[in-house]
Image (cartoon, rainbow, N blue to C red):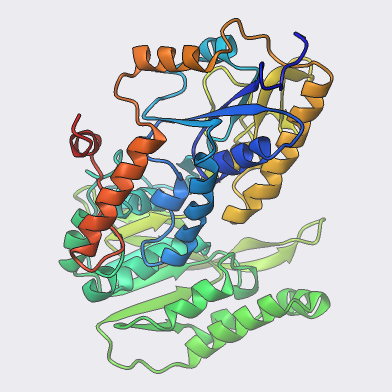
Length: 467
């Protein structure tokens, strides 16, 4: 190693790929080190930072978005740079980054939905939930998606928080949505929605549902949607009851109580109805004869304990058909391989040990390459879970620096990387550009009494910046 990497004369240069929460947490941990001088360049395919905080968090959950204030503080560090609209593998390659940086960290998240793997899944009217989420949140890649909101019955498969977001957005009134930062075209489409009945379908029981209590409680407080559940489906089976009693987990007990209360509710005549179902799995989507979805074929499940004690569903011989013309699946996410980076296909994550990327043949760390967040460990936890995860990776990075195991870039100067980006992607967005766009969005929103009015087209963003 050249002596003195990590000094003011020779800063440790780090490239982070992916500007979601994990990218910012990684940058924060790197820049906070008092002993090592680090410069961080954060790359993202999209012009805007924050990843899922901007494009995944539901528009009616503004409080969760306040975490971006912390990210803006990280970005204010003079040793931080943002290159938005620069795609790794296309605009800049791994070879490019190795020429300019001592260390590279992949924080690309889990970008695709898992499939249900059932007949009829590709009928029109069947969609991954994340496409709907990206659409209503104004993601430039998904703004032109269409969802048939003339359908009166919608089914959402899955009982995680994303599934709950989807049913809540479908059940909200236009007045409720008009106070949020939902994309304006989505607000227009949802204003005309004819949806009357929404079903949320879980393959296991209420005790195993992945949604959190605040999320499920909120469903009982919708302005114009009655929420209900079937008494027999929210009653715990003997195995679940024993597990809940054993664990004495207050949150799970509370969750089951909330759901039982929903099952006892009488309809109050609201214009929409949301039904929470448990212990059912779709085995087929039934077509309408014209290429669209008409119904889901559901099988009733029972739970059994695996060798590890986990309770899993097993199908019975009881079936039912649930009519629905629009279906969203939210049954988990998968990471997408990063060009040129070893990937564990069965887990959908980058092959790594504590964040050090591993060579698939030798299982030894590859010098200078790291990963953090969902692409490192799989899609688990909430936004904040990525903070300790990033800290673990950064600790490995500093250990490797201390023993001289870093890349030896031939052009480590800050200006050299910027010159490269300007050549490859002259229309890149800096953090200063983003702050201008942010101010424009907020002032456009204020005029309509909304938190912001999002710019959703890249051309629109460029012209807003006068480019």
